[in-house]
Length: 377
Image 1 (cartoon, one colour):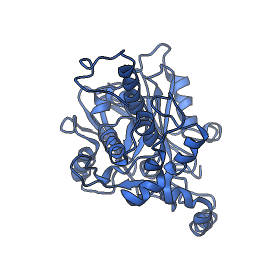
Image 2: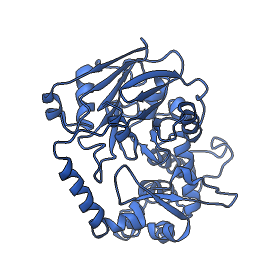
Image 3: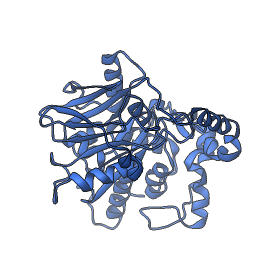
């Protein structure tokens, strides 16, 4: 079908077996892609009562209907499984370039089951698929992992969906990181990836996605390129953090573990302040001219931040900023870098910190149990 690669990649890590399914057109019309694919396979194939961190759970990387098509918004993809965090349906969406590269490499989705005996990564290149050893990558940060795999494959344009030590250690809110800056953040999908000894999925493809009306798509892309400033300048200029002050004024900004909805330091951590202080660049997703991704750099010794890891989105600023009583964008950006390096969801990680802080202030968590730290807001 037009818009799709027409193939689903199946991988059984326990059996070291790889095969391809070619669903009928009715499958694509019914489930469309992304979350629809994930829901289909989880409902159809997942055993009742399965352990989310056991080998019988499925881990699904799924592209959407327009993923890989050269128009704005087509860089999105999804990762799904039975969630180790909730025990229910787990799914997380993510931007970047991996989803487009996966479809161009020949597959609309990858369904992984089982557990490898030793750490591995999956290499997908123009329809060819290979499991490779990742023993030398285990324990590495996402930046080290990306650099090492791209070096091994001799191609800096290989795109990766990967985990760091957080996923390897089965932290139940670990995420999957794409391109260092983009996170499939929610529901613990990174922990499931770690439970399967799967360090990364690497994809590289050159064929274009087949289109029914290629000229029409190109015209749409040209229109978006000419008009995006009128439609979405705010996202480009101040990012998803641009409305933080408004949320605080409305009383809807998570503050000190949700004890309040207004934060006195909101002006210090909003998108315009980030733009005027530590922002060095704006990153984008596949075929999108808006470039809303923050890229920050901090040079001082206390909070040195590598711009390779991007910068904090609103959720991260809210979780590590106002909800922890922190009004320093340098500290928030450092927390974002650590989470991206270790593949931890910034929302859940920040909420765990703020929860511990309130417990400390309420006398429920001692300084001794807090490893000698004074966890005051």
